[in-house]
Image (cartoon, chains in turn red, cyan):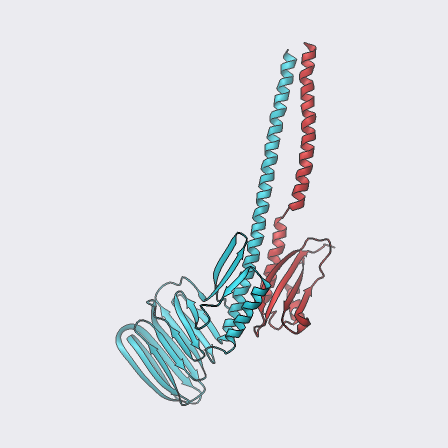
Length: 139
Length: 264
C-alpha cells in the first residue's frame, strides 16, 4: 500500500522534472527565434520618418538645385531629435560627380532602415534618392 | 490507496496545466509571427507607395514644366492655364529620359508612355483636354461640359476679331482677348449652340471652334498667355491625371496605376 502510494508521487515528480526541462528548452528556443527575426513597429516607424522627410524636402523644392547646403539646412530643420539620417542622391549630374551625400555617417553595428524614391530637379534632371534612418544615441 | 489516487490526480493536473501552457505558447508564437508578417507587408507597401508617389510627382513636374501649365479646379469647373506655347519641344525627350532612368534603376517598375506619346491628354473626371502640339488644343466632346470661359493675352496687336455665335443651345460662353499692343474683343453669352471665332493677331490667324456637343478646337500660332475654364454640372469624381501607366511587378505582387497630376 505504501509502495503504490509513493509510486504515484514519483510519477508526479518525474513529470514535473520532465516538463520543467521541456519548458526551459521551449522558452530558450522561442526567445532566440523571436529575437532573430523580430520586426518591430519602431523599425517601421523609422522607414516612415525617413520617407516623410524626403517627401517634405521634395515638396519644399530642396532638391531643385541639388545644392548640398540647402538640402542639409532643410533636413536639419525637419529631422526629429531622436532620429538620425543620411540621404544619398545619385544621377547624371555634375554636382559631386553624380553622387551627393547629406547627413550623418552611417553607424556600424546599428539597426538602420533604408528606402528609395526618385525625383527631378527644377530643370527636370533625374535623380535617385536612397535614404537611411536610424535611432540617434541619447547622450 | 487514497494516496495513490492523489498522486495520479496530481499527475493529471500537471499534465493539464502543461498542455494549457503549451497551447498559450503556441498562440503567442503564432500571434507574434503573424504581426511580424503584417509589419513586413506594411513596410513593403510603404516602399511601393513611396516609389509610386515619387514617380507621379516627378512626371507631374516634367509635364507642368513641359507644357508651361498651371491647373486649378473647383466643384463645378477646372482651369488650364499656359504661359507661352502649349508644349515645349523637349517634353517628349525629358519624359523618355525619365522613364529609361527609372526602369534602369528599378527592375520591377515599368512605365508606359504609349497613350501619352502622340497627343498629350490631361484627363479631368473623364473630360479629355488634349495638347495636340505647341499650337493646338482640343477638348473632346463630353456631355458633362456646360460652358467655357476663355481668357487670352497677347503681346502682338489684335487687328481683327470676328465671331459667329449661334443661339438656341444650352452652353454658356465667356471670351476675353486682350493685347498689350492694342485691340481686343470680348463676348459673354448664355443659351448658345456653337461658337466660331476668327482672330488676326500680329498678322497671324487664330481660330476657336466650340461645337454643340462640347468639343473645343483652339489653334493659335502666336505667343500668348491663355486660360481655359471648363464648366460642368456634375460633382467631381476624379482629379487631374495623364494616361501614363506605372506598373510594379514583383513576386506575388502587381500594381498598375495611371499617373495623377500632383499640384506643385
